[in-house]
Length: 308
Ligand SMILES: [Zn+2]
Image 1 (cartoon, rainbow, N blue to C red):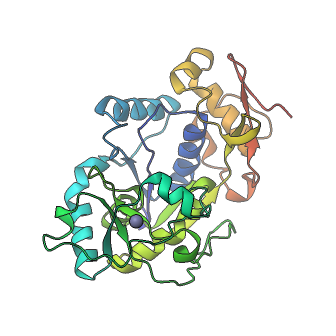
Image 2: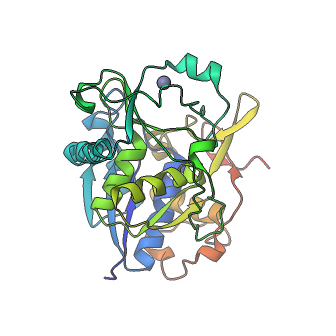
């Protein structure tokens, strides 16, 4: 095994869909072809949407496709590490409480680089109360300094950004006490000493904030590669192929090796889709063969097709 450490880190708020399975397959092929250590980290910290059953269901979906892991962890088990990171940021004077509601933020701001709303910073001069961040009943945000961050993407995706200007100060702790994705993901990658992050391009716009957090918390920055997405038409525009079909319905129409072959075919890893297992794709795996452009797919109710 090499010194490299990779992870696949799906959110478990819903069932695995074709895009999840594609992302998992590409991440698995990347790690296994490099003989890296590969972790499955189930991102289940949103307790309003994630249950122990949904984490098990995600694991079952990935096993069904034929993927395996050197270790499996639940992000919710790392709560004390996430809180320690908040302690550190609070000590450096970088946290502040924010009372703005979602509608206030929408009214007073522009779109952020990730498609959300850029926070205008109206609360950023507020100090933490005497009792520290634990006594705050509002949202906690990170006070960013305006600075251009230029992370490198191995596949050439432009990740350069001034997060303060383009995203606004990110939420690190929700009003209900839930740790935010950006913080949990960066702390867990840092603690697991992850050296490579392979993930979908929908997360590319978050990378500059992740690198900023790594620097503030003293973690090394991993190598990044953001790959193409499966899209679907939804209400006249393109969205991630998400809601259309979950893995349990896919399983009624596809054997795992048939779906694996289909995903490998659309990714460009095999010339024509033919049944295959992930490990049969390893010998010839090469990112130069993986398509760059996002791909439109449609679930007919029986099969996944490219409508073009
Ligand atoms: Zn505010």
